Length: 263
Image: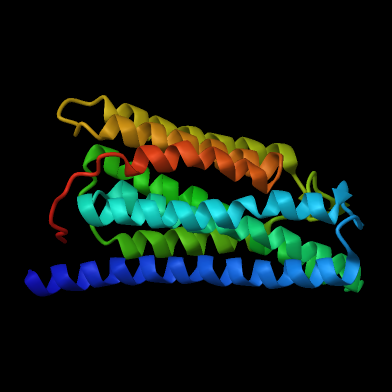
């Protein structure tokens, strides 16, 4: 049992370290690419529906919120060992994927084939869907879900997201923000993702009100609601929507109980 517990804890810490590395790589890549675009094209160059300055101002929100939020929520998880916080931290790492939207500006100026735009669109959607599926996995623990192999759940969420993103039908027309391709069936995509988001929110909110629920359950339920709102707004309006995750980060980090991590 001790060996299994230590191995399980090691896997969780490894996943958190990997998620942090992903955020750092995306943030560093974003910074270098932004520097290249500004020096080569200039702040006032038109790209998408606005200038390069406006694009960078919007996309910078995602990696900043993801990095800061991840650090706070990971610290809270190390104190409380609450499964929901583990999945919150991984979800915040997926928000950094919105920073990849600035890569489309470089593809646009470089005049590369549409294949790369389609590949970028699917990659961004893989990040988005992974985040939603991770939130769904975390919501199961609002009902004392007994399964403790978090790594397996995270792997399933990632595999499912990549599978769906690979099969997404795409239009050759631009999406609402930043020149990515639009999803082929936008109404169907909205319906499916909305239903999943409602299931996640319902799981957290209903679980928080069940008899015997811990005192922090309500706080985490509201944190999950803010995270879902940030996720949706980032897709519909642009990466600046990630700012809505800030209240969720505060709530998730608030008064985390000091306990010993166990399997």
